[in-house]
Image (tube, rainbow, N blue to C red; front, side, top):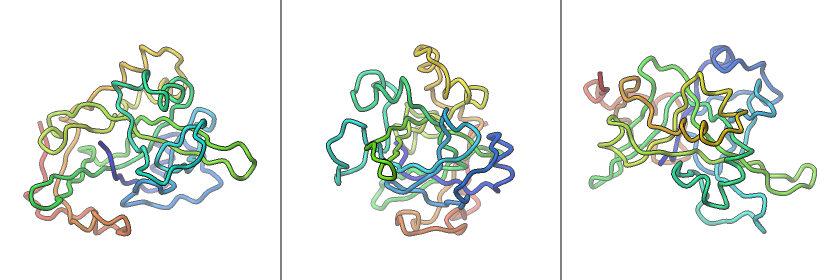
Length: 226
């Protein structure tokens, strides 16, 4: 599962990493991006700028926008089976830029951990998106993050993790029509390129924002696999 993530990379570095040319909406760092919020994605139609879609997929065929729990994740194993995911997987894929994500251990209380690249670089999670409503100015664009089985770093914390794409696959993820090629990308990211550490339970509240959320509880809580 992936239920919160961050994107705080300095704007010029982010633009260089994803080859962005900037956009009409201002870039605002997010330390605790949460479901139903408007968060950054990159699509095939606008590969050189960030767009901001609602996190929680609303299929184009829905009669209304559900008020129940939003569909924030799509399992890699059932992308080509479930009606909600099938068409977006074939035609509407996106990159979800991030520099970290959170997951929780439930042992008496919810203890959050932050996961990121070892070199703290940005990365892209695999996403799918859809458009609900066609009236000009009233259309809702939304997305979900694809999840897969955990790598060895993630496994003690949770039985799912977001699909983190290899950088060389970004263009193909957006543009390819080869379903087998796309499914091959949906693998656990190598654990030896990641690290994780405990952070404050302030992350548990969707209202919490700011760099203090990234502070390790203790330096000894930082761990990674060599």
